[in-house]
Length: 600
Ligand code: AGP
Image 1 (spheres, helix red, strand yellow):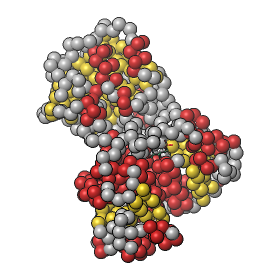
Image 2 (tube, protein in one colour):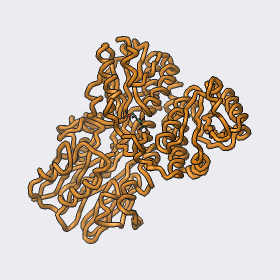
Image 3 (cartoon, rainbow, N blue to C red):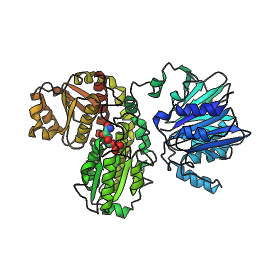
Image 4 (tube, protein in one colour):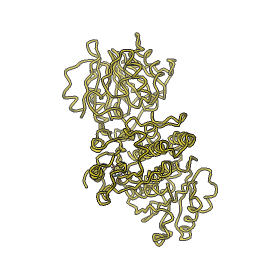
């Protein structure tokens, strides 16, 4: 996600804002900016590119109150105009999150005479606060926040007034001596103070150099507790988690929430992708899809095959990107490329090949402005925020989120699913972030099983139908970070060869959530148990049968069978993580691997 910083004190604000933004650099960003109250005006300096370049371009500004931002683009390209802070008169806003109703608000504010210069959702906030502003910034922020739908962490500057607020996006207030801070992430301000107050959803803070007042959403004053943070800088960058991978696994509820934000109306049973430039007639005409991707993104694509075929009746071929050029595609098919980085050389080469056949192309990616996004016809962003661990976790979950929505949307347009089915699926999907949080709450249980795995040399992940791609993903995660040989198999395929490898030394993870293949899955479990393999099942929380057949069970919350793979994913991620940890592996930088594979 983007980074926010705010300062109100007696020192010069600009160097502190720049220094603090620099401490968030490790998370990735595409543009940066600061706003300072100087000479009775709010002055803004921002640009695409690095913080160091912004710093070099800064004039000699003085001012002891200001805000800063590093942007990771979600609405609008990465460029100077779209960089934060955004202004309206003397009000400047830095924002993390997504304002879901920004189009409606933009229209309303335009009618009121406000002029928009950027493509961002954030600019509506600046104008909205300006609209409500009389003579006190907090009084203007309170009604403005009531008008918006979505997630936000904001720092707002107006003259010498500095206000912060949050909903579904983190924000912390740092308490110093004669100075106070706002930050989206603790490392940004850890050098200046260890006294932190965590804002909760719908809370607002008003900062001066000598005080911080806290309010609820109706501007009733509230008391907050100060926390003393004793993390070192490295721990702070990981929000106290031992590894970025674990942090990113824990960020999945929020990542998925952002993936869905503004795209789903479960009450009306509708799905909207602003960026999808395909007419209903064009979608009705799609009879074939080629999904192209590598690694984890490929596994997301494989689940997509089941979803598009089931929800929309569209035939899907899933192609390993590096093999695509040798298979050929027909010009009539829709080519969907999936790549979290948007830079994977194999995927890019396959995309170019597909375009040369005249195929219509669509990318599902996390990085705005990446090479793939510049070359495809359509892009859908996953909005997971920057991912630092080499092992893809939250980007995979968000890819799945997009694919579920896309398959449902195509199914609805093609008349393959009813409104009731659509609403039911959307209601269930909306519950998934909270259900992931429940799984994360039981992670110690998964850690215990990981101890068993950590001594293995070989292992198997098995599943049927839509659980099969998650078996592949579990095996990929385990081998990638723990260096244990792992195979992902369609459970029915075991007896055609790999069963010969099953012994008491090959632990098996069986993804056995309920569904039409459940009984067959139980038979496959019996097959491997007969060869003395230790079996850990991933099963629905209501399943009381499965215990009889296996050595251990991790239960996941009940949901629609076809949606349960998202929940099983979290279990295989945690299992891989804790296994790698037990083996003392360099989890965030596995040997021989890179986050972005830019060579063919
Ligand atoms: C996943 O954990 C791996 N790091 C790898 O398989 C990755 O998914 C693959 O290289 C594709 O990357 P992309 O999504 O950025 O295209």
